[in-house]
Image (cartoon, rainbow, N blue to C red):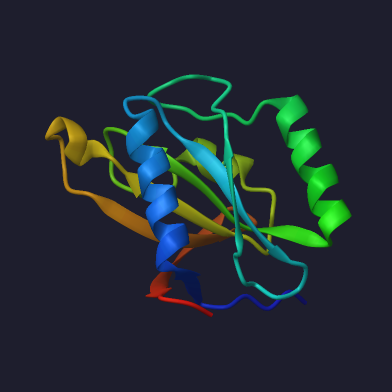
Length: 146
């Protein structure tokens, strides 16, 4: 049975990089991964990805980029600890599409809302576990270092 932590802990530097990526790609959704040593649940490496859909309402990893990512993760004995993307006009909560695409049962799914950039809402940075279609929000703890 897979046991999931109820909190995402990440460094301020990684938090800042996710937020910067989300803001830079606005008004399109940004997406990427934080990789970490297999079995540790500790995000260490920032891997921004290209949103192949180039859409303000949908994100999609390019299939070739995704293949390269997983080969690289295998070579480094890493796994995707965090899968992140932004919502540009709505709150930072997984959509039905996000839930349907969530296929990493051990990953934290981070959503950043950049709706504040257009005056449509407030900035949000939230983390969720998505397992078998069930969404559970978890606390986010930002630390200086591990």
